Image (tube, rainbow, N blue to C red; front, top):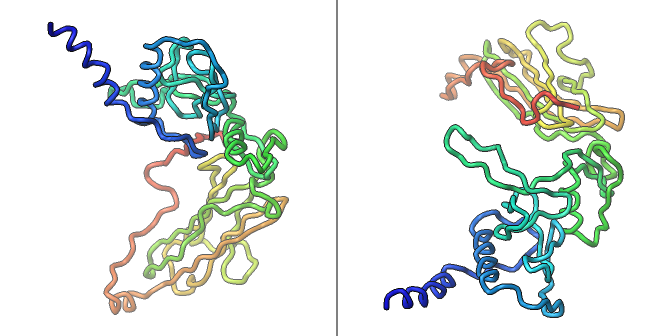
Length: 308
């Protein structure tokens, strides 16, 4: 007597757990609970089996950034999964869905396996080569460009050429881009200070430092000023530092990070204010800690040592 009653209640309870999926938009979908809801809806549909295909009854999918794929019954079109979304490693399964154009389902090994994190199947782009779009912007790979093209269909976005665009910026501004500006700083005499400047450009840019309105490239012959450069932290970027050891009142002024390549140059200023111990005591502000050009622990960039 109890088993038929349990069977009768099972499907309604399962249906109550399933919330209707929100309408698709041009935004990147989340791989969270909505994803699982779509999976459960697929399982319910498969439980009923595939009816005869009637394409005229299929709903038209909208906002599909990764293109279209056939549904589990190979009848209607539905939105494909985009890069970073969960997917089905088994092509015959239809729980998470199929990856879109230029994408494939792979196990993501980015988690910490030592902590018991289980690799998840995610859609990944087959190509990881940057390319230049017809809008003058650099895209990390073809999948990102296709997403942008489908999100803005009126822009008629296409591939201009393989490899990054000239400086990755839309015309008419092809010069380098300072993505991290130096900031204003103050300290007391005898302490060390450091300015940083991060630049994106293709071709790669060089970084120079100037003080005030002078065109003398630092450090010049001043032994208490030093500069350092390093590729990264992202591809096609370079970072430069200017360090002043044991600052003195004559070091006060405006310092400029100047980035240049064959296409042009840009600069970003930052000011240094130097206080004497007497001035500092009158303000009641504690002194800043001394800064060093090379930190005790090296910070690894996400691109490793592969810079361009």
